Image (cartoon, rainbow, N blue to C red; front, side, top):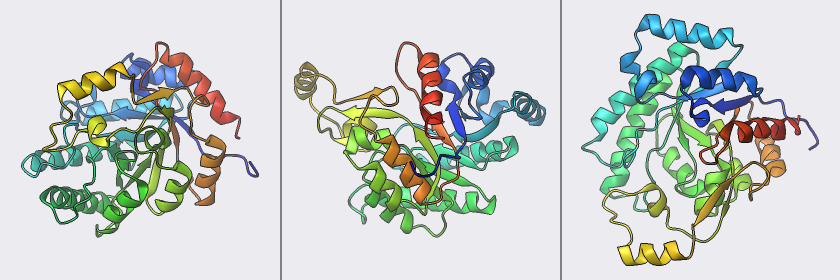
Length: 293
């Protein structure tokens, strides 16, 4: 690369599978500078953390010499596709953003569900309404809800984001999701979504065959394949594989160069969702990124 990376390296604490406090210690030990933490349920549920607990946690993280790159506020299900479920999900998302800001980060990453092709349909309208409300709330706090890439091509996601009145809903760019599910080009995706990228994941993978994103992420009203179809596909093996950095099909040299070309100065946060030894994989991932510095 012509210019070395200057971005800080983050780690998703939950990838260690050892709880928040021990995960924070391990993040420091593997050489990360920041952390992303799930804040939906359990000990990080905003409803379970009073002001004293929030101050204590922020101090604990600071004492380790870390900062929070983002919280993860993925509420599961169909994202914001179901208008009837959205009021509760929107309110929970707002409380997660409140927690994020109090802990020192302006970013909450999330999945909103696959953006449908039918821009005049009820599902598109439900997602648009929820994201508009969330975007305005985030903007009022100088913060962002960041949608993770992967469920749909970057160009389609951009068209959806362009319909919102603010950039309070932006993008958490995950190159591996694009490679594994839609077959989209992460480098072009960075250019396409350049005005919205506020956080990134560093993950690698390989697409083994074409797959309907609805089979991976779910879709409101989509029943999926029949048992016979699933059995037939299972006999042929998986659709994609998440792999350690450098072992998949993400061209990280080109990807990092693309991030530099758009002036992205935020975190490169390592995510490892599979594998028998996540700590070892994450430690290697930190060293992998450092080669580009």
